[in-house]
Image (cartoon, rainbow, N blue to C red; front, top):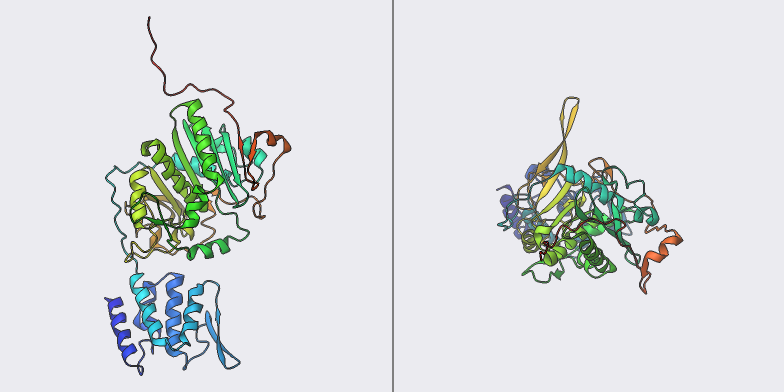
Length: 442
């Protein structure tokens, strides 16, 4: 009702230029707690400045005005999106009232609430805490830049719960700075695939770009399903996909019909989701499990519904105020025009009782956008993004796309004309196939 009132009131403002719906400060009209995201806060601040630009200057230190050569110059705090500046530039093109109305409508459609229910008749998968603590170590290890240690599984992150893992395929796309591996874990009796997340020199730059990614690619075979072409291409149109499929094929040929587990963190989680969907279409959804950590949204609601039907054994683990799962933005009243997470989310957050702090693992509803999970808090933390279950997530070096590899590994490599390569080998130990032929009698 408050939002309807604001919309109605501002329509009166457009009709009557003598009045302003923000002559009194914003909180008097719209409670601040209703709009707790940085983007919505920025929009409200711009509205206030639009309506009060002639009366007040430098009222808000986060959005300041100064005169320079008889023109207004805007200075925006880094946490406010570039949209604020773009909107402000429109103001002095004689569109002030219409821009105000447009912003109010954006706030109206961008309110929080329960998301679109995903249609999936399959029973909900069971979340396994132990499995999550194992897979997060694989998602961490794939970030390692020393390919010799990673390929031989002797790196500093290659111990603990992943001891004994054997890498069969290590794929490095130098051109696009992508990295993934395929191997076999005896303790899980499974093929494990892990994708590295973004390796930007500054993760802030990558997150800023993530805010503006558009739904611009129709996913093949999914009616009305749209994804971002960059997310889709990172897996489907690089050396990564062929390397993954080759590694899985050889593992199944040697070990038999093992289940497949796919994991990744951040951008690696987005690639893991597309990989899991690809493998489920090839080998069947019952044979594929996907668990990602701090994954961004990758498609719209139609795609999310399609994904949940094809890959039902999927969990997205989020952590406290991790910023990345909140991006690209989601607006519930535009389900087919905006990004939408697929289910099922598991939200990690701390619950304190005096001096005692417990980490809660909340299994969220089947909508993919449970308002009582990570959406219930503001996504404003990079540090929460870089740690899951106490495991460090991210690169072991600040250099972008740094690679260390011993010359002895060249015999395992296959290099394309762009310098991308895959290190491959056959399993060093034989395990009886899970599928055995019956004994034939004379």
